[in-house]
Length: 296
Image (cartoon, rainbow, N blue to C red; front, side, top):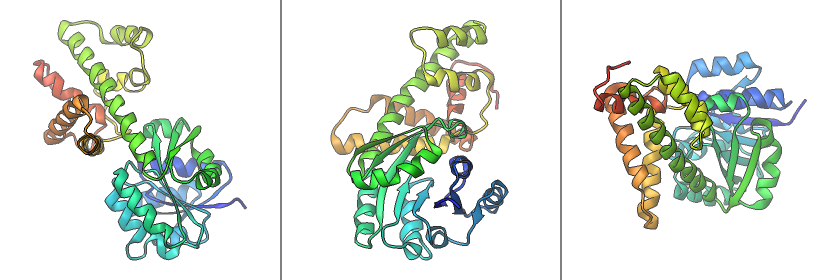
């Protein structure tokens, strides 16, 4: 039998983690508040358990994949939380997009209990996660990072150590900030083409092959063009991430022009009922401003 990994949060990303970890020979035990997600975990060959504490018992590594750092804190330190089931030396790797200061605080508190912590954010969509095309960006001690490498290799194509706890979360927000700009520019260009009557598929093909090409154009361009907002991420999560980035800009005194505009567009999409759709559904806000018909 392989080494045991616990996971709390088996939603869009977590299911892909489970799949690849099992394929890599790990035992996986997991918990989620969603009965449907727990059923999928069982179907994939993982072991559903009754609480975050149970997910930690007997595991060498515990992965959290959750909506925000407040939920991570409750799952780890709350009643029946990870800390209650953890043996000394357990490595908790939080793959959520969290507030860096929250990660630092949690890491300090866990260290007092003999539990090791990495803010091990991942970069990539859930579709990329299923292809094992994610990277891990981790903050923590070099020793803990090296000890977690086998687990990271189980569900990602590369892992990077960025510095102390909190640096992984900050780096993820920087990645997201640049991604915001890529997606915004692509959507704006596509809407201009739509308004002008340019053939969408031809335009996207040229953009993907031109000097402006990016992963965003390959992964998200077709979704924007077709109005396919099947979630690989979600508007509500993208809005949360944008607000986290803006917080860091305020805290550090850095300009956040793109993040500010992105947050407003995601807020508009959220208010238009698109919260649970893929984050690129914000292109509908731009289409409306251009006087184009609604697609959702």
